[in-house]
Image (cartoon, rainbow, N blue to C red; front, side):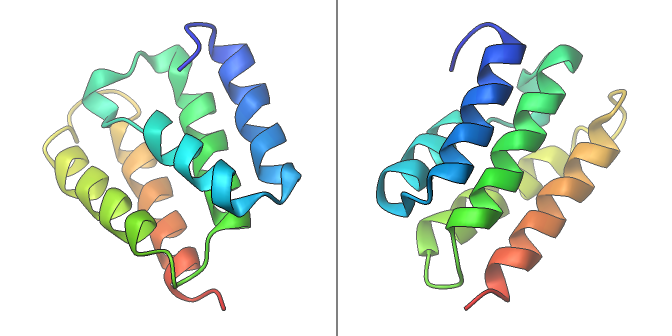
Length: 102
């Protein structure tokens, strides 16, 4: 939740590369917010959090599936915002990856 998008993006990448799923997943899920609450300069850090989550989580992570499903539902109503459609698609892909990962 760093106000600097660059630091948030770097932190998300570091969390994903750490391999520490127990701590990393909780941090990433806490940082993910609906697109309508983000500024456009925060989109890369949101994307980095999704990528890190796909590295750490697998289909046994029910919290991940719940959080991403909630984000998808919330973001569907934000489709008119610039960049929201691509962010929605990235969240949908992250959910699919996690649901199919052993």
